[in-house]
Image (cartoon, rainbow, N blue to C red; front, top):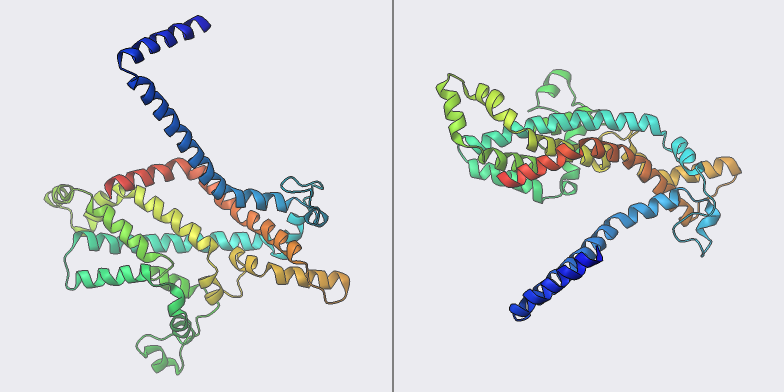
Length: 333
């Protein structure tokens, strides 16, 4: 082995001498580039993963570990009590099932509606097409908080051109129900719907028109062509949009607090975990008491870990299809 290395090294020196030192300089520059790239990637990975590792470490600590300056990462008093306490505080399993149901239902409706709209923008001509697509881009740019009052009033006093009030004498109150969620998803006004329409439109624009023309020659109509020819080819972008919609819906507290305030969801419970912890400490001590900032942050970290575990499981299961869908989408865009 050593003899082979010495032989290769001598051959390299001979070739380097013949090239006037160019070969050695090229090897050194390649090695330096590889080292810099490895350092950069390690730094990026550390920046992304360090907060997650920090929360995992906090979730297994006891409160006295928080005030011990000698403990930085690895807990000295390992415990699972934090998970048990957070489980009881946020009613974890009920919140988990509610979050799964609402996230899956809203994601399916959202992706279905955005697929139809995106296909229409990509393939059909209609009056004011550019204007309406500009409105879609505005949905992406303008944050939903700017129309929060309008959304609340619209669904608090819901009516359709005054028809409901004409027959019933009053408007409908759709607050604390799933109906506003469904209406927003179906009308492409849900969370990040503009982004999904844009991505799906770009994907359909990349599919050759000859496929549609061949379907028309075979006797397919517009809807049949969309359903039987175009939709099966769009599985990569639909998979990506569904996963994005699911994750964003899972962590959303803006729409869920506005429309589903009484429904137990993980996103809502996490934002209220400090007050829930204060109520718990008051109930066991008999006097009004608040948790320390460090202890409250430890409970929040534990709750966040419990909330993202389902997302990590989904990513592990769908990792291959998700990466492939992103790569194919990137090539065709």
